[in-house]
Image 1 (cartoon, helix red, strand yellow):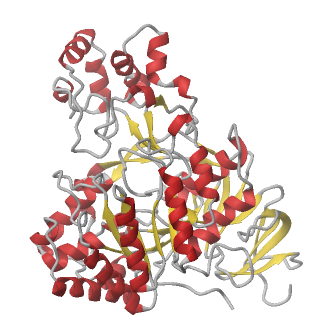
Image 2 (cartoon, one colour):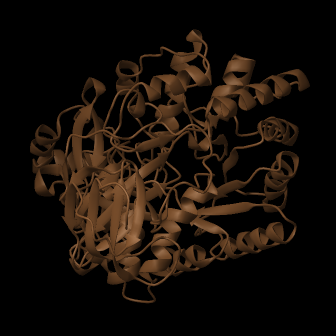
Image 3 (tube, one colour):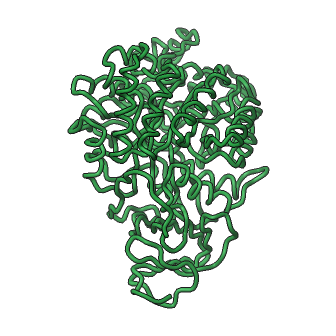
Length: 576
């Protein structure tokens, strides 16, 4: 290459460029925040990284996170940045914090706390609320440098509350005038830099008071009207999560939104144990939409969508037991000490009648012992069905409930049990592979920054590479396919066409990975949110360097203290 001396040269790595082509040995030269060469680089960089034998990939792009609060107070967008993610997209599932009237701060906190399991106390202390419009919210996010790039979408729940007040929160039908006002606000948000508009239509999403999400029963004319407003901006995407109880009607809503707006859309695509083959019907609907010229994609989790149960978390099998509630507010060590008393255990088990706290997301399945596993370290996300705790208890000649009680006391109460609620029918992740391979899906649904006491899925991108390309006992995926899916395909699906590829002109977001050593540790509970709020974090080993805009932000799992990440305002075009 000729031209200015590179600021950084990544030398001699195994380049997987994100375009789906084969691996090749090459150097990567970076000037400023831009890749200038992928090939043989004769010039010496101001800094050099020896990548001999290591994978060199674009940075992961995670299209489904919930850092809406955290991004306003925290420079490090962990857990995502720990797992090689260099761009996150938040504001999914119709929840967020703008636009907002001052009188509605509490309502939006309750919605986020209930839907995404983020402690209300942390949100109360962390959110500055120095915004009202969505543009002002973006300015607040933009005022803080982050370790990785962040983009936002405008949430339907906040729009509804802003325009309709209590009627919107209660799920009342919007008037034509209110629909037009929401449409105009959505358009203004897109013009201010939002990537798109999102909504939720699932019964699983409830406020911390147990009320349904405000958008649950929004009429088709409301969804289409807002989508039309997005379309008037000439850019932006649409995102939806739904139970798809009436598949024809609900997918019809999605099609109508895309037709009215001429904008791309995506939705949550899973395999449900209630209808194990239903996802194939959804894939067929994607093909039909594509044939009709409609750009709709399914977002697919890279493993089972599951819940973590433990004494440190939000959920455990005894959380509604009246005797357990006597000690529920003690710290974990004190709780373990009391629960270790045989007399307390006997009293708790005698009082138990299978109570389930269905006011909490996942609270209705905390007693399905036939689908409950000890997560382990390293965690096993495709466990052998014969290792479920019911089977373990049976082999030990014990009742499952009593057996689980003792499990929860292990490791001073830090042990986690895992329930793979979706994508794990028949004890395999074969449906996940089938969905990931479909040409109109992208990896997503990590919920990074959310469900901080019930899941730890910010590690989805690492699972995609390790489990599916190296460790799985069964059909695997190729590294070039996975890198394209988690980099170029995710970025471009949301209009971010300046990243996700290692080629001249593209944004210099790069991972250097020791592929053979790459691994995920068991989740750990930390108490570092505002007001001492808890959250699950999960280490990864094997990311040698994660680089954002040409600046290393993590080296061998340790933060460099650099914060080159910025707010991404709106779509980006392919470099010329």
